[in-house]
Image (cartoon, rainbow, N blue to C red; front, side):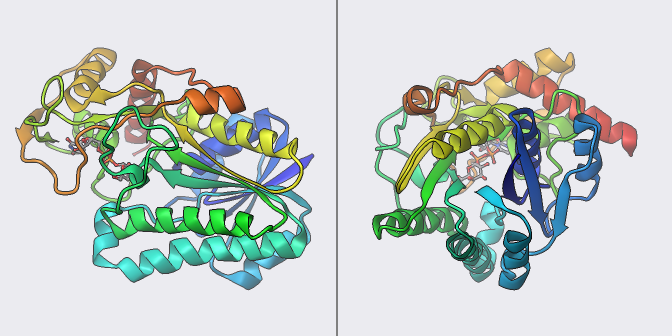
Length: 339
Ligand SMILES: O=c1ccn([C@@H]2O[C@H](COP(=O)(O)OP(=O)(O)O[C@H]3O[C@H](CO)[C@H](O)[C@H](O)[C@H]3O)[C@@H](O)[C@H]2O)c(=O)[nH]1
């Protein structure tokens, strides 16, 4: 059994990836400090998998604790999700973001070198593209100056990985640039658990439809897009999880040293109003929303060119926007039911 350490494995994308890893014959070992995730996620995983996974309640910045896990388990790879991710908060407490997101990567790289673990998949983001000059964005589209400290940590971590591999380090690394992750596990046993008021569109939509929020504000309808609202590429979290499994499988067949980058999106852009309309159809109810002002820092439109990941990793999305919104809605209903 190939043991894979998943830092942030109790989080939204991490927990879905744990499931897909087991399905593909890997053994995930979760490391999470539960600063932005809940222990109940482990029950959801048990419900889907029919057994418990090994989980360490530790901080990824705690070198000693991380080293002990590497010492105890023979790992064949690492997926490093653990990071702070709130764009707005990162502008208030930038040092927390730099310390947490950058230091934890260095801890992981040092432990990998010390214990001879060679394969790493790193969570990057389409935020590194900012507002691209041409669409769709390929992996060669130039990165822009980061709009936030959060975005800058992703750029810096990508640079660290590139420079480390360039130095000749005996490691193989893939950065996955996620577009907008949405949806939940089709069983509704795991899904997104936003802390407080959600910043992201889909949890805000489902909480509004469930009566937890009074109404959704669409941030701007005067952009240069089909209906004036912003365009994003919304990718189902299970498809995104599968991209990590395919990345690890790819790295496992390679020898020597390697660094590569892949976009993970559907290749299709949808406006905010299209997402709302699709949600209304799948949920069979009207959503209370108004049009408001633009949100500072928002890019107008971005979607992925997915040619490279399809060609090299053989990955393709299996879920539609309807599937994503249906799964997000079912998950929200389950949360309401549980209270
Ligand atoms: O209440 C809301 C929330 C969002 N939106 C709109 O919905 C779209 C998607 O917004 P999200 O906040 O869900 O996602 P973003 O594309 O802004 O954020 C993504 O990109 C960010 C960087 O720009 C970070 O990487 C972040 O983690 C990632 O989810 C945007 O056009 C936004 O303006 C609304 O209209 N109303």
